[in-house]
Length: 121
Image 1 (cartoon, one colour):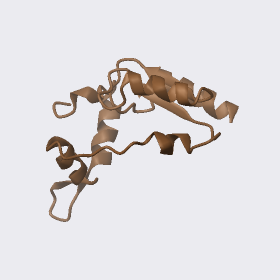
Image 2: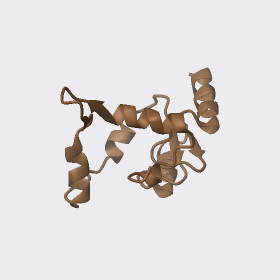
Image 3: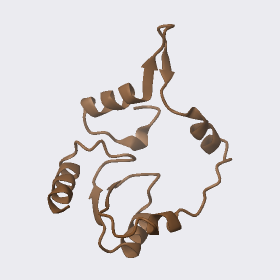
Image 4: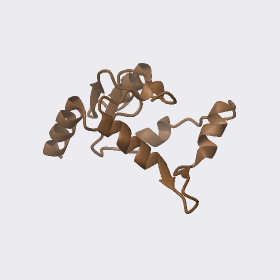
């Protein structure tokens, strides 16, 4: 919680799932990252170069899309979320209040959005 305050998970269970999905106990008995930490190093060092992902987003074509945005996300901005809706007006989206990046999917708003989305596809 101290390292990732912008995640804003609302339950102890959500924090526990994050921890269990982020670290694995090694043969040495210590916890080790279970993801590519080079990504975080590049972001922290300001070395990350961001390609233009809009062509890839448009390439999704007519596939059903649901985007959930944590309202206090420091990764997916409101401006990008709104542009995604303009680019694909048929896209389903939901804003999850009080949540950072990334929603845990157990929030009431996430569950409602997911249920609605899957009922329509």
